[in-house]
Image 1 (spheres, rainbow, N blue to C red):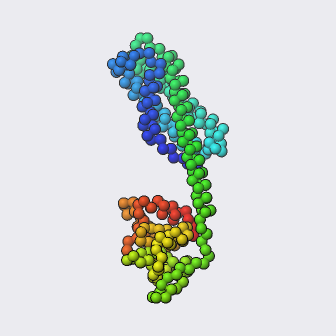
Image 2 (image 1 turned 45 degrees about the vertical axis):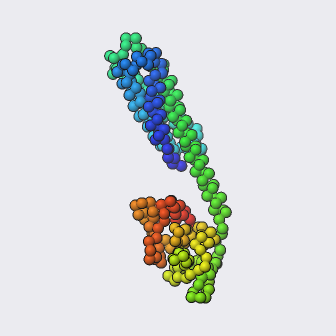
Amino acid sequence: MQVIYPDKKIRLIAIPFLGLIFRHIGEPSPLITLLRSPTYYIDLGVSILVLGLLWQYNRWVFVQLDKQYSWLTKPTERFVLQFFLGIGVSLLLVTMVSFVYNEFIIKPQRTPEFDITILFVTDVPVSFLIFLSIHLLYALLYIRQVYEAKLQALQRIIETSEEKPEPAVRNIMAYQGKALVPVPLQEVAYFYKAKDLTFLRTFAGKDYAMDETLEYFENSLPEKSFFRLNRQMLTHMNAVKKFSSDGTGRLLLHLEPTFKEEVYVSRRRSPEFQAWMREVTV
């Protein structure tokens, strides 16, 4: 299963916060002294930048492993690969960057009392906890989405099992002049409302008037075959030949037989209509 991680806001907040923590762990100087030092702001910027890049790298590792190693089916392989490719590589890079940055780039601006070995005593353990927390976060997001997808699939199965079975033969009683005639349901293309009256149109293009309302047919006809497009129309799936967006979120439909007025699905019901067209078969 390909999981999409909704983590943009989390990263925007967490990366600067963790960068700040990373810079201050093991720092003996008072905050007021640090704020007066230009080196402090350089250190803070480097911490946030490196952490942001490594967070993005670890996220990439997650996405790639999701394609082949599920937490649910291959937990051992996933744990080993994720630990070494994610946390292990990240710790190695943090160690290398800390050494190069503090020993060669920023060393002339450090105080004489500064000792590079202190960084390895603080940076590596703190980095391990940070990246472990990141991996736990993504693991929880993964498990949450997987189980939500399973629950949704189960809900769809339950709803499908509760649907009314479509009868093999069913007639709609409609008026032809003053006489009532039975119109087989399989011949109905759509129902529509005009001047407070309800009509049906068959696939052959014949129109019939009825006493019942659209609401009545919406509640009594099989949901897998008929969909309420809007207040004026209820259509059979086979009458929908194509549809497209009008740029405002509504869907414009082309029906056969054609309807003289514009046929549309509201923006609110567009996702439901597309899911109905995509998933339901008649």
